[in-house]
Image (cartoon, rainbow, N blue to C red):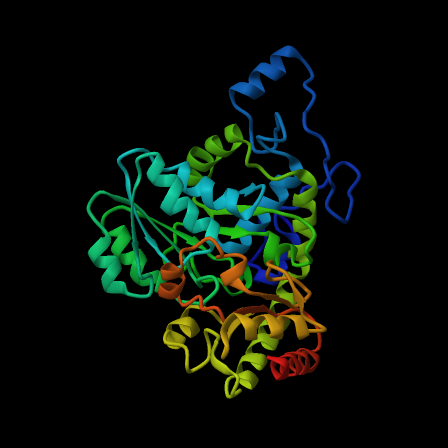
Length: 397
């Protein structure tokens, strides 16, 4: 696809072609530049590049690399942001987006329903460096309004929380945050780049763990920070390139290949997820089935407004607590037990003893992470096989 197409292209087209840089050999598949350094024609050329490297000029792979740059350009085009910076992992993206812009004395407001490592950053690491953090119920817009102050620098939340799939009103929070000049930073991994409308709804910075749906096949770690050119290149990049959180060229190449068919994968996974949620809702061994587009979800209308489909993850809560949950997990034959999500393989996770294990029991209870809660990430298997597997495992629970 040409750098300046004659008309705007659909997201699936951008996911295949955007940002492509071809070498002199005219390769079809993106080249993998496995090099940590670059050669200069002269000492003067080296000096000039260190003074002001252009977007097509590279110094060191920690600062930038042609393969990584292709991935950054492509996902920025897909997300609808001016720029992106690729990181070594999703947590490097979250940490980099927050730490790069905050200093001692700053104030941020964050939803408390977060992935365990995200919560560790906002509740443990940021306060160590003098950042004041206010944790709130992210689903309550009135709580955001009460917590945001004239000196608030940022609002941070997961657009769909992990693992209880709470939905935050992105546009509502953005209106409040922008009223005091604060940035809205959204961890959008559950919404996926395919179903995301975070930027359209007012998000300033969007972060992803590309380990999840972008790779989608359990191969590589990766993350990305999407935002304005100013934020990405003047705020995030200096912090990340000097602290070492950048993505490797090999992983960037894997992510480029994942983007080519991500739309097809994610749509199929989301359809399976919606099917399973509907089929499991009336099951008598479950106290609840959580899926953003189910009518029983407290923010179903908001979820439908913010996301074309409900995503690839649902959660089920088994009667009988941990013992029933473990019996269920151990009886599964098709669905594997792991702690990733967004994979081509369906994955079951017990958050209370794995991803959120270190949270105090009262915090787990407040977030709805019960001993019987199972997070199910739907893969690409036949939906009927997955349903049969779940129903058979529930019979053992």
